[in-house]
Length: 494
Image (cartoon, rainbow, N blue to C red; front, side, top):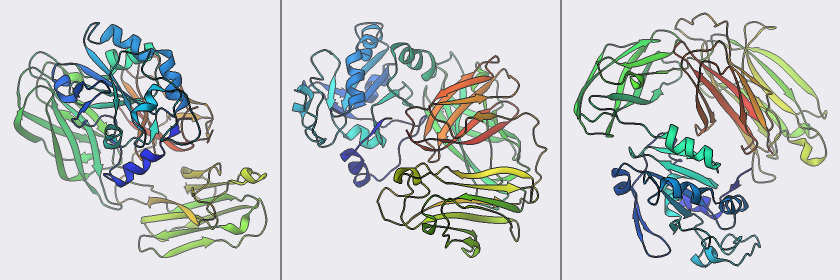
């Protein structure tokens, strides 16, 4: 598991208070000096058409040290950096806010203090620029190390773990950065749907980008599928790699189908002209089911179901039998917005194994009827505490929508299947019938992208290594021309 940033995490909270820049968003510009006094500015290098690889590390981190010993970045830079094909630059960024430059030179000293700890000499076997600055990681919003940050010439950011040479070569050279077409090539990216619970209209944000050599001055966008919205005409002036963010407001929803967003003008590259997104309409059923398996401290646990006026409709607590199993089906009074709360007065949730007992669990379902499950809405496997502070009350909250005024399409007969759930070190994913195009993505509950790959028509069984992931809930999404399917999975704490 990756080691968390300690003092840097505090710095991020006190500095900007902003969330991490997400995979696929724009990277900010910066100018810094390396430990030899040489200046490095990001945007001027990107404007030369180069990709910049930032290796953010800390001298106290064992995984960072192990990766440095492998000399992967040095080999990659020799082939693709200024002394090789000159399409990339690789900069190493020491990201601990409290350290001193002296830690980069060693000798090794690990005592548990990030301000003085180091695994040795970080500069003697490398000719890469070494930049001692926490400002970059702080601005990005990193919360763990080490991280490889790939910044493409169009200033779009990509994140990766410590990659092997061939993985790094594939990520940087083959897959990550968008290529430019000769002529007129508008492209569309990064859909974001804004919808309040119970509303049958949405606002849709998309990014239009010029990936051609011809200046982009106009483009027309059409929506089909689950939304009703006439063609939208954009005009402006975008040079190569430049982009504009559009907000389409008041789009009426038709049903729960995916929404296809498409550029409808003729251009030289149609592969980046359309994408799918979806406005989650909630669950058509108005029955829910709770399954609660207590640990060996039952008196600490309680739960509630509340409506959108914050009124408690159903609740439970005051349990006194260790490892008791509680189950019940509850009728919601009407279509609308609701919340489920799981409380623990000691903050350790159902994590009984840490005290020599067994973990409990909590599951929450949407039901067709009192016996037939529609969908699993919430799952907590009891393998982690609800609070990082001992003896502090804490809770989990899950919001959901019951019922919909819109038509719900027929359930697909082919489903995305993820197992085991919870996953330990490997998550097996079986997708339905192959398509010419499919994209698999996995995000955590905060929206951070953890895994993404394009699937060929022959890939129907995929294994994803989760050994270094934090324990918690993740969303697995498969996007094809016909549908978007999302499955909620749990990864165990390692």
